Image 1 (cartoon, rainbow, N blue to C red):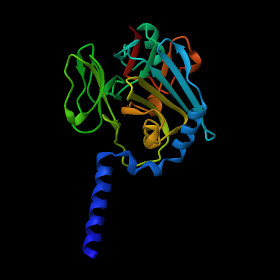
Image 2: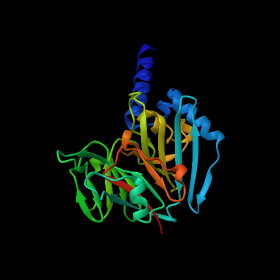
Image 3: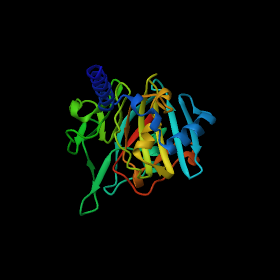
Image 4: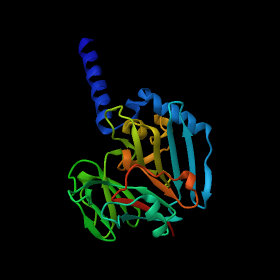
Length: 271
């Protein structure tokens, strides 16, 4: 009897920890972060608002001051590209949007500043077929715009040079809906997030106000059965904090200026 019990315990332990390693969401459902639960409840009570054909927004605000905004995008109506600064010390989404006839602009990958004040990409990116920066081999992943939009972990290799892409981190949900976050730092910051839903639509999210940790923000992108809201098949975080910013054509009240100019952007244009 003792031997059988030991085998059962070992099997359970193996299954449980395999679930953690593989990112199986069931292992974490009961550990939903309080702030994520609060936002999920707020979103459930809110309604999607149509901005224009193929573009909707939903928003909620928590009692502690976190503002969560999500744009739902139909990929058959819009196309994406990577845009970069014209000014060596960076630009803002509100400047680049009108110049490129965009519908929506959000900050993209990480960047640094040289001694001369000029911004440069941190991680690898490719805009208009021109690679720039140095790739991370293992951390983060690529947001790729080609024949279709993909999120791919960095350890799967650099995308084909003909595609437009930007490298960022962390990958919150790996393709196939595999939860990729292991710990919660509880550091609340503004966040910019990109998600590919299981039904093919795209979610671009902004966390402003009091902010969220990456773990909390990522939790919202999980499937409803796993405690989330947006049912993302894959998701990645863009550069956050003071870089977080967006611009929405025709809706200045939905645009967010951010603290600082940035090096590169995700540009959404109508097909």
